[in-house]
Image (cartoon, rainbow over all chains, first blue to last red; front, side):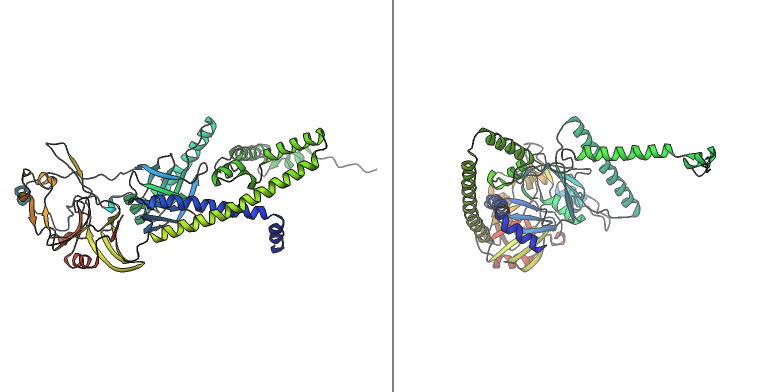
Length: 213
Length: 282
């Protein structure tokens, strides 16, 4: 086996050169893009699919790292480029609570809440979804999923819904193919429940991401 | 004379039927149909790269931004080249000179590639150094607004982890003026701009609207000492890391965008950080 490799190296030095050039050019693109992002004061996401990690970065510093349990690309080839988050889709979108204008007198006269009852009106990490879709400006979407938690019924329901969704996706792809339309690519990312919620929390509309595929 | 034993109609029927007398051919037909459907479907799906990227030399070139010399040609390109070379052979005896020309072109391409490699390596090294230089060497702060945690770091070392209260994400609308506020803690990279001991909170308009009070005209009526604790660290745009009266709510998202900390923690941060130190918020 080694002899074959040596033979290939001796006979086709151009192949090696081309590979090295390709690697260097790819690295060059990511470094250039990152430098551009790091020079701004904004938070940005670096999604490294081969490295199985999502990095939250600001000013060139990785401030948080989320491991990717599994990922795959559905549809056409995902070219490396800078993308901006244009929208989030989830079955239960978290809603921002509206502040009720209350005078001091009203607050003082209000009955005390029962012990153990959470009366805090705020948008918190637990309000974030674990399954959602992030739509980027070029149409590419990141489908984020987390393994189901809870009782058996919840898990079975979730697996059933995932299976139905998978079949629907396949048929949708076929339909588009038959119509001669191009399928919008998507990247499916499996994260742990808390990490999926953290990603939804921190990745806001207008933020930029860099996807290494 | 040997006569072949005549096969009885019954045994002939047995050969073509399953136990129980069921006929074989419907099953064979169904199996054939399944094979044809699966094979046809697979061929149809894979024929032009369905589910898989259509990998052509053109797409690789586009992806890698490579000059055409270093990519092996596609089958169409090979066919075109073959057609061209056969025409050349027919045309005249220029084959030797063309071969020489091609060899020279290849050499030129190789030289170009190696010079490209050198310049790319140098460029990449330079950018890597530039990125590494951006990482702070001294103390800096990382704030996780979801977990309500403030981490004081010195390079890779975590000096302290503190419980905080970050923005509630609530929305307030001014019923009179139509103004709207969202109480989020901003995200990104900030620097310590001001450090204040015994800060006095100058209540903004939203603080009066929220309490259903009229907005005062003079600044003195807005001043509220003690609300921000003993120390405040300004990071710009009116946002501060400061102490709080509501220490029982630490760990929850309750603030109007500032980062509230316990007395001991804000004391430590105030004395550890200097103006210009970085604060990273996500």
